[in-house]
Image (spheres, one colour):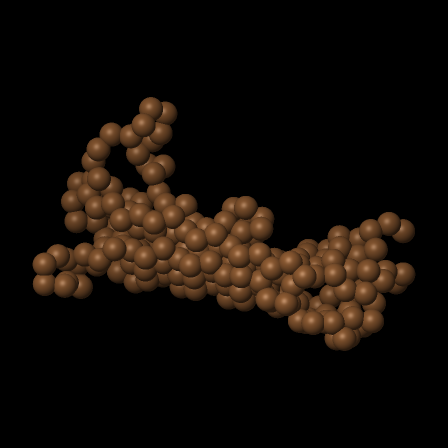
Length: 212
């Protein structure tokens, strides 16, 4: 009796419970990973975060749902092993019912690019700006939600003061949010360090099914 709430944080199969004929599905992709940053001074060096994934929300009746649905949950963009590498894109989440209903997709969040790379020059400087990760969006939902673009940051060798109550170590760029805020599918925060660091990985996606 009553409604049933099911959450998929990894890929699997949704099978409707007996007596349930109405289904609300929320499908969010994986968030984008952040690029690394190379330190070449005594201060903080920073880069932009990864993009937030998109979300598709759709209602299905029992005919549209069918006997089951394949749930593919998108991974967050993986962390890199090299401080001079771009981040990785997340991957899409897909809900595919076996009945007559449409397949919905939460598109992944995009990677941010490396913020400082001493091996790349344009003839006048030895760095490039870190591009923030672009957001994903929902496909085939009755409601399609675009994720949030990551904050831009390209601070090199920062040693200055901060506003009262803010620690310099907390000034990193925020990764893009999603339907869930900074929860599932959010992009990785940007690299921000006094040493060379690799970018962080994005948050994995999610599929939620409410049945009644």
